[in-house]
Image (cartoon, rainbow, N blue to C red):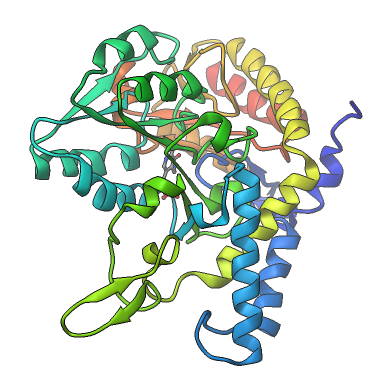
Length: 404
Ligand code: PMP
C-alpha cells in the first residue's frame, strides 16, 4: 500500500491551520466531533447559493434541485452503509434522536410488561437513557452486559442474559469512552437466535471502520453526521425495510402524511413517515459530501493509518510515569482514555489546552463505564486520520512534563 498522505489530507481541513494560545491547533477531540473538509464547507455554501428551497412540495426549479440533492445524499448514505434500499435510510438530527425515534416508535410497539432490553456497560448515555425511559413507561427491565478489565464485552455473560423475554439488544460498535470495538456480528447473531431485534450505535464507528449493515444483519444502525466530517444537526437511522414498514410514526406533521382529514390520517411509507416537518436539508447534503470524501480517501486506508497512529500513541502513553490507561482491549480504535497521578483530568485538559491541544476531560457521557473502573472522569485524546505522529509527540511531551 502507498503510505497515507496525511499532510495532503490535512490541507483539506482549513481549521487545522488554526492557532490556539499561540500554538498550532492539535485537534484530539475527534470522538466529540470531527472537523470538516473544505468540500463539505463548499457544498453547504453551494446549496444555499444555488439550490435552497423546501423539498417535495412546490413545482418549481429550486424545489426540484433541493429535492434531488437531498435524495442523492440519502442514496450516498445507503451505499456507505451497505443498505439494501434507499428507503431504509431515515434522516434525523443525530444519533441521540435516532435512538429516541426507535425507542418511541418500535419500542412502544414491541416492548411491554415483563419484557427485557439489553444494553452493554460501554454505552453512551444516548443509548441508555431512552431505553431506561421506555422500560419505566412499559414495565420492562433493562439488563446490562458487563465488560472485562480491558473494557471488552463479556460474550459469555451476554449469552446468559438473553432469554425469551429479550425484545431488543442495543449496543455500541465502538465505545466513545474507551475505544473498544465490540463483537457486534456475534452480538447480532446471538440476539436473533433469541428472537430479539438489535440496534447498533455506530456513532463512533462510521469514521473509522467499514460498515456493512446487511452483512452485520443489524435491524437498526444509527450514527451522527458530525462525527464523520459532516455538519452538526444531521444523523441517520438505518432500519431494515420490513422493520420500518411496520413501525408507527413518532412525530406527526407535514411531509410524513399521504392524506389528512379531521377523522384520520394516512401516513407515507418509510422513510417519509419518520421525517415530519422540514428536515435539515442542507446538512443532509453536506453529509453526502462528507461520505463521498471519506470514500475517496478509502476507509481501508484510513483504518490502516489510524491503527498505526493508535499503536504509536498507546506505546508513548504507556511510558509516561504515573499514567494509567483505561481501556486496553485487543480490538480498539482511535480513542485513548487515561488518568495521571497527581492531577484531576480537568487539570490535564486545561494544561493541554494551553499548548494548543484539544482533548476531552470528563465523563464523556458514559458514566457507567467509567465507574466500572472506579473513576468519575478521564482525559480522552481521540484520533482521526488527519492527526500525525508529530502531534502525538507534542501531547506526550506535555504529559511527561506534567508527570515530572
Ligand atoms: N453514541 C455514541 C457512542 C457517541 O459517542 C455519541 C456522541 N458522543 C452519541 C451516541 C450521541 O451522538 P449525538 O450527540 O451526536 O446525538
